[in-house]
Length: 172
Image 1 (cartoon, rainbow, N blue to C red):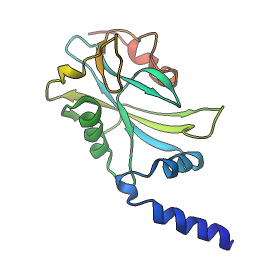
Image 2 (cartoon, helix red, strand yellow):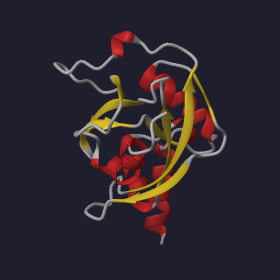
Image 3 (spheres, helix red, strand yellow):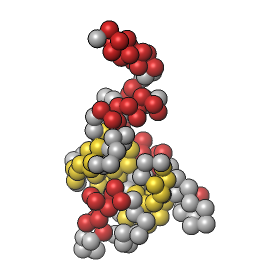
């Protein structure tokens, strides 16, 4: 096993600081070896609409999703929740400490980024959303946001599997 040990030493030397995030190639390797844990932020307005952000990537395509992010090594859920709010929404929020829902998604057709454990947290905005990041249908960009009263047709399939019932819940 000397070659494996050498490879592990090399990978560890490239990892920099795993609690800050991994280099892309190391992250993708890890995603092929173990499930990734992520937090998702359920944010509703006074009209009970759900806040979604636009995402486009090579793994899940383009469409709407519930804002969320992968928990870093030794990172608390609350730290990642606030980091997601800042990165995707440029906003602050409060949140419940206990997840509203825990779910698992497995992509049977590929290994890279193919297994997630998702924790959905109920959140409430404590700041205004950045109007410059409001969704522009003429020029969709990652992290643009919009309120939705129903599930959009272009809601990412991976999230449809676990979150479609959120849009069916009785409206207040």
